[in-house]
Amino acid sequence: MSEANLNLADPAIVLSLFGPQDQFLRMVRNRYGVAITHRDGKVRIVGEEEAVRLATSALESMKERATRRGGLTLNEVQDVLGVRPSGEAIIDGTVEVDLSHQHRKIKPRTAGQASYVSAIRAHDLTMCRGPAGCGKTYLAVALAVEALKSRTARKIVLVRPAVEAGESLGFLPGDLQAKLNPYLRPLLDALNEMLDFDQVKYLMEHDVIEVIPLAYMRGRTLNDAFIILDEAQNTTVAQMKMFLTRMGEGSKIVVSGDVTQIDLPGGVTSGMRDAWRRLQGLEGVSFVTLSQQDIVRHRLVQRIVSRYENPSSASIISESTASIPDEELGESDSQP
Image 1 (cartoon, rainbow, N blue to C red):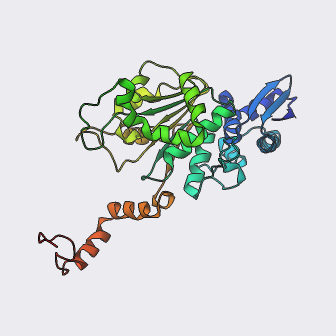
Image 2: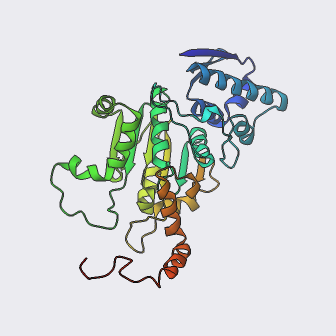
Image 3: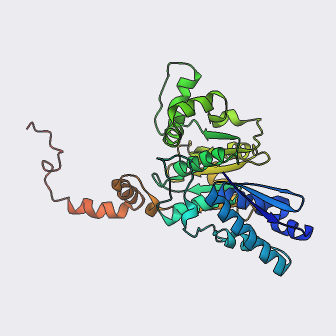
């Protein structure tokens, strides 16, 4: 661990530097994964050596601007931290997610993913929509683990609505956890790639990490927590409101989903679509849209998504095969 100090003798500069309700200070803390405290005219920055260096440099730049101009704006802070007002990130080494693990290094692989990572670090609530395979859940879980290890979060809460994807699973044997496991498995898979199995088991047993269905969030208030809602397109408007209002002091929420894969009954409005429109322009909320170009799974996934989203290209090929005999297409009933 490393430590640095920044002198702030003028109380007016302190207020400008920290921002309204310490917003700017939280942005620096989340951007670089450091702990920042202020006492007796000194700001103390603690964390990994490189992160402390970058955070100190950012704070010094912000201090210089605040001194020269008599204050700071949100856009200026975003510029210093390498996040444009639109939420688009300036790609550099600081975008790497630090899991404090020798063999696990995670970096955004596209500009869209870099924007997503930077938006999460700079905002208390980030909403991300995009197709399958673009890293929405994976990167959010990685940042949650990073926050836990850097002690900027005391708890990780991974949430998913228990909605079946177009088919009924019927009666499932076992206790409640066994019944819910199929819905929560994707979140557990991502988590197990970030941490060793024994670590995950220990942290879950001690409620440091929770993986729970959305219905279990009602009535809770979560402080100093990193909360992720996955498959958010399958929430109702009421469920989304209930979930977003669980945020307590020092918490961060990431909401991710694919609005092209909604499994709600017909006529039910998606809570994610509603929140995307309703929360536009709200300070502290970031919106990130990932595309086919951000898909990083098997190379075929990007092409498959393209075919489903652009059916016209498939119809052209279909017409070209119309003259091919059924036998060659494998549709003949005759025996080989």
